[in-house]
Image (cartoon, rainbow, N blue to C red):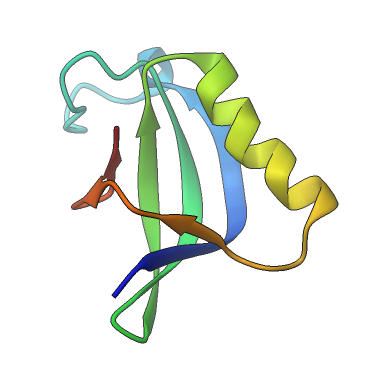
Length: 80
């Protein structure tokens, strides 16, 4: 089953703005908080990106589309 992003709730946010207690995947510099459907369940999940351009690309999708964005390479909220 394919995971789907239905909406972006917050972001992009720089990982430099996070408290030290927050775990950040290695080499990730920005994230969005997205509403994700996984196995029919909806949850809010951090979507991690190396660059601001990558995060904006996902955010831009939702400015012009009402359908979900399918994510094929998702592992525990980490997008390659």
